[in-house]
Image (tube, rainbow, N blue to C red; front, side):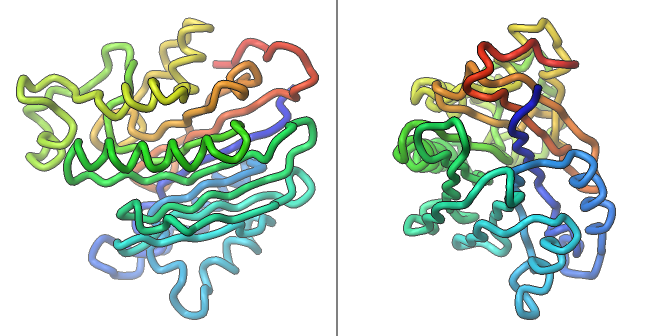
Length: 277
């Protein structure tokens, strides 16, 4: 039985505005999608406007989701990344943002006490830069450093903005990609640039969707999650959590990204059951 569900969603301009700042309140539909998934921990990216008007949107989200904010962090960009949690499922025991500006969009680590886990569970809502692959690698390793240093139980989840290590051959023709994304995500031979994924793999982080795809032969787990037709939204787990991984779900939303959710089994329940489709 699923024990802990962690969900991630890039809201697209906060879910409350357009790219040029005009009102576009998609939040009620996004909230309904989140509530249907009923996550225990929720990671959001592109929280544009969430700190405006005395943090009105933060309080609105807490009310609509019946969840609590663990932390919202901004970097040098507009918006930021947030982590929410469901009281009773987990207990927050820390929020670390000393390295917030190491990521263009902000870096904050939510720490949770979870029954059955011997150390603190570190969760980072992640949104890497799209400027260059080199900057993405540096930012990715900053997150990996943070998520692995609080006892070894960690989850890096969000909009990684780069090609995964494995995608089942599902990547778009670079000729159809806008020049900036093409420069960032493809090498000089127009092949997917997988440097970010390789470095995270070497750092000991496991791609949840690819791991379950290999184990269950469900190639739908390789499906893209963003408008660039790339599986940019990913959940990466530290090694102690991999045996607990039991499910991965991709969810259509009112954003330009699909949401993703992973489920973990109880540590004392034995090997995780085979994942559902």
